[in-house]
Length: 127
Image (cartoon, rainbow, N blue to C red; front, side, top):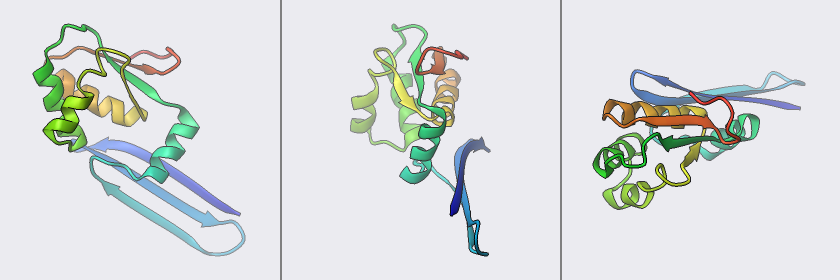
């Protein structure tokens, strides 16, 4: 049986991810770690399955569009068009992702003077 563990964290202003696994019946094992605006799907999916999605929304729907665009571009390595396509989501239904992804975006938005709410998608645990 293969055991697989994943994690995601913020360090030195970047999102990092890691995964490791091993076989319970032999000596095979692996460990990988990297950083960047996009976490591999296998790591992200495992985190979402284990912990559920987290929602980021604007505390004030009247927040300016420019700081939201800049934060999205900086944290997600998005083009202007990609950021613009997502820029209305925080003031509407919100953006959803892993806890670390949403907290990282929240840091960038707060640095630009935008008040945000980060909460479990079920409405629990607002921070």
